[in-house]
Image (cartoon, rainbow, N blue to C red):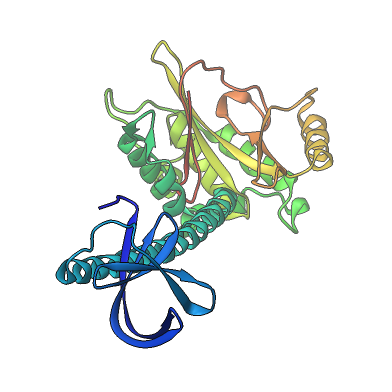
Length: 324
């Protein structure tokens, strides 16, 4: 039997052979090298125009009726499978396109959330850094956020008491300086217990008379700024020699002109020639300027604490950025 034979069965048909018409049922057809034949009692007739067949006795063997029936079933199943594969591939392509769009959309949403705040969405992206789960960083961030109790009446009332009456009105740079200055002037530095990192709630530190270490100062300053309408973040900086430091930064402007206005006020009030700030960008590329509020700086926007190691940035919504 030729390897190029393709058999199938026709349930009912009318054909003409040598001028005589025949009504056939369950007749066998075979296609050999692209040419279709009708098989009748072992003799094959080539299919010609107008559904007529011409005799051709120079063909191979006839398969048994049982074999042809099985072959017909196999062919039918194969055709169904081919159609199914085509449909499945089309559906799979459509699904993949939809999934890609959803991922792109989700990525865009998450990028926006980095600025506006969505702890869960961002944590899902950055639960691992350098292949290691950042459980320690997350725990630190949670403790810091919990300690920043800016809605606590003690924290809120203390912030309001520090603002000079001449600086009333909408949240402004003069209020920022008033609050920072009063906390700074009253601060007493005291270490945490050796080998133990404790993040004191802002209200507790205030009630204790503003005593604590650098992270306690950062938490108090960040909390009181937040309680009057500001948006702070806490920086945990480390050096390769094992030393570390914590300080607060405050979002103060989203344009160069806004930043210049902030610098002009601070430098006039504290007789400085420049201010220290960091720049971030939104997902749209717009700048965000963060003012240094470190207690070692002697005034808002003073010189940064220099470090050559890891830096962890904690936002009030719990989002964490890590730089090495």
